Amino acid sequence: MRKLDLPRYLRPTTWIRETGAFLLDFLFTFALGAILYLSLGRTVLYPSFGGYESMVRYDALCVEGGFGYFDENEQYVPYEVDSSKKGVELYSQYEMAEKVVWDYFVKGIGESEAFSFLDSDGFSSDAQPFSDEYRLDVRKWVYQEFFRISDDDPDCVWQIPVSEGDFDRMPVPREALRQKMSGEDKEEALSAYKTMFEVVVGIDADSDSLFERAGNHFLRQAPVVEAKKQHAIATYASLYPSIILSPLVFFALVPLLMKNGVTFGKRICRIALVSTSGYQAKPWQIALHYGFIILIFYLFLIPSAMIMFMVASLILVLDYMAMILTRYHQSVHSMIAHTLSLDSANSVWFASREAEDAYIAKHPQSFAAKLRKEKEEDAHKELVVKEAALREESGILDSATLSLNPHASKEAEKDENAKS
Image 1 (cartoon, rainbow, N blue to C red):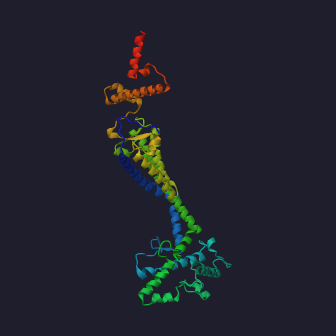
Image 2 (cartoon, helix red, strand yellow):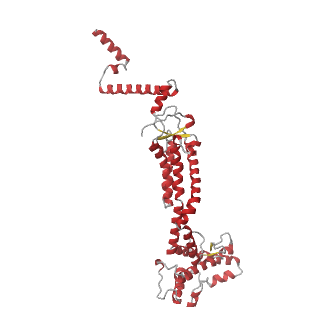
Image 3 (cartoon, one colour):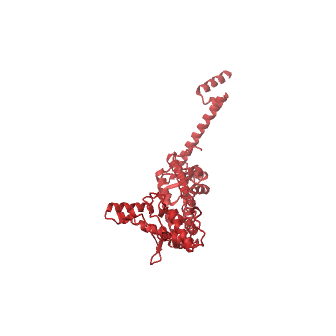
């Protein structure tokens, strides 16, 4: 890339002020995005894409599956463990969680047409669906496959069923655990409740608890997947105006309409955008400069949050590091667009070369005229030196090169006198 050599009347801004200008523009963009989301996205697009219907359907499925209930205001309330409780009060909530698991399989899958066993469950029954025999097969499967109650497991915490009538009720802890729970020894009771809590609810997020597995099983049900998918589409669509229109307003419309290609943030921080030639930036340069920033905002349209975050972070870090480290604090998108951010309060620039020539012709004693003259003289001297070096390398000597060497000039003058 061509090295920039700016005249002294152009003062590049600092990277700190450039950062402040971007943060201000980001706040303006975020504020407009919030307004568009509330006025257009949430009120128009979200319901148009079935957002509310999908949520109502999802809540109804949760209630039908036994994971919650509707209160007196018809609001969905999920069954949750109250982690603020301590000791036995906390661990005894395993009973509520176990009932949720039991109701989901026995009443939800066993009696509702909305749910069914998954292919990975390995459930099979020769009975007519929803018949008494079928429900019995469901309860046996819950005991044996989901709760994993077996005589072969010495660490099993559940009471082993001895008759088909035992399958009509939820599994209960082994007799030894039940005695500890109801005993007078508080430490043994706490330990027994905690054991059941670990199996049913789990102590940490990575535990393979019954409650967690039942919830994941529910989320894989076809109606649930469809409802969540529809809600995700509606939510995604409701963000379109905020993500698409807001950056266009502040990073396209405003710079193209305002003088010197500035945004509101640059205007507040007294920054002007010019071409690297030192003249006013052309519209295509302004569009290319801010188009890069608009592209960063449009990365939020990527459905995968992880991919979006990684790509956006990489681009922003590289762009920001370039702005900090380069001589005139040019970011990558400034280099691509051949633009430069100036300190507008301490810089003077012209719209074009023609405008500069006209000003110098009218004001020959101005600072710009003096700098132009100095620049032309320096350029002439540099050209003469380069030509002399080129002729010396090629072995060509003439009056132009000799004049550059005072000793050679004297020798040539003596030769001319001798000839005369």
